[in-house]
Each structure stands twice: as structure tokens, then as C-alpha cells.
Image (cartoon, rainbow over all chains, first blue to last red; front, side, top):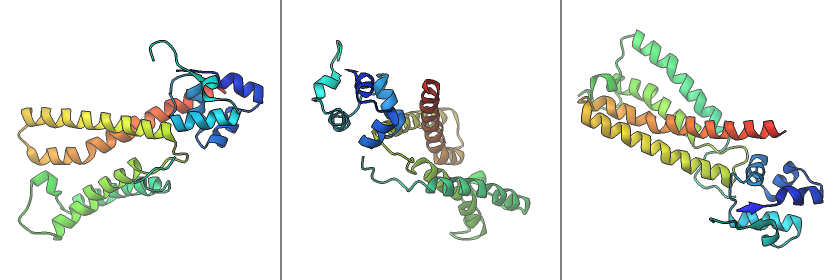
Length: 66
Length: 144
């Protein structure tokens, strides 16, 4: 699963730590999601999308093989 | 994320305290001629006698300590930690059963296998869990 959290963060001008705090996870988790080493749960993905004020599918997209 | 059935964060330090505490008790006890039940097999002296109490103060204190260390919450206990925890637990059970089965086949000393079983899953779980978290933190500091 791909995501453009890094881009969305840049647009909103918030750090990984800010985002982590807003969704209630550690900075490591946001970092591994951004680098696509970890796939978040639906709840966490929805929370992240809500922080950016965008629908889920604009932040997370399926990729070939998923 | 709600995390059930985990000890508070400070229990980790209590756990290490117990693990460290068992070392001097064990050394002092052995110096004074105490024998661990595990080394000699069950005795017929009954419960809560000297030998049994020595066993409780050493092996069981250590295992209780490891248990607290293994199942204390992280500072931020999120879903990724939860997944690493489950994954490490799975590996710990694999390793434990591989050792258990191999030793049942090749070793006749059943008494020591119980001792092995007491701490192998916990030790392996702790090492694997901490190692993955260490690697996570290292990758984070690399990226700044």
C-alpha cells in the first residue's frame, strides 16, 4: 500500500512528531508508515486522513500485488 | 490504542530489579550450601522448606522479573509495538518448542528442561522485541 503522507505533511507543514502526537502513536510508527515498512490499521489510516482533512483514498492507495 | 493485560511502564524497572536481585541471593545461597531443586530434581522435603524457599527466591524471582520486563507497556504503546510484540511472541514460541522437541529427543534430563522452559521463551521474546525496537529507533535517528 502506497501513501503520500510525506507530501501531505509538507503541504500542512507539520513534522512527523506533530502528526504522531495528533493521531496518538509514536514517531517511529509514522516514520515506518511513510517509508512503507508498516501498513497501518484502518483506524489509524482514517485518523491520519482526518488530520489532513482528506478522504482516505487520497492519502493511501493500493498498489499492484496488494 | 487500548492495550489490555499489560503491566504499567514502571514494571519494567521492577522486573530488571528482580532479575538482578536473584543473582546475589543465588550466589549467597549456594555459598551456604543451598541447592536448587532444578539441579537435583524434586525433593521429598515438602513445600516451603529451605530448599523450596531457596528455589522461590532465585529461579522464580528471576522468572517473575523477566515476566514483568517482557509484558510491561512501552512508553507509547501503539499498534506497531503491538504487532512487534505479537511477532516476537510467535518467534519465542517457535524457538521454545524447537528446543523443547530437540531436547526431548536427544536429552534424558527432564528436570533441566523445565528450567530451560521457564526462561527460554521470555528471554528470547525480550531480546527479539528490544532488538526490533532498537532497529526502529536507529532508522529514525538516521533520517533525523
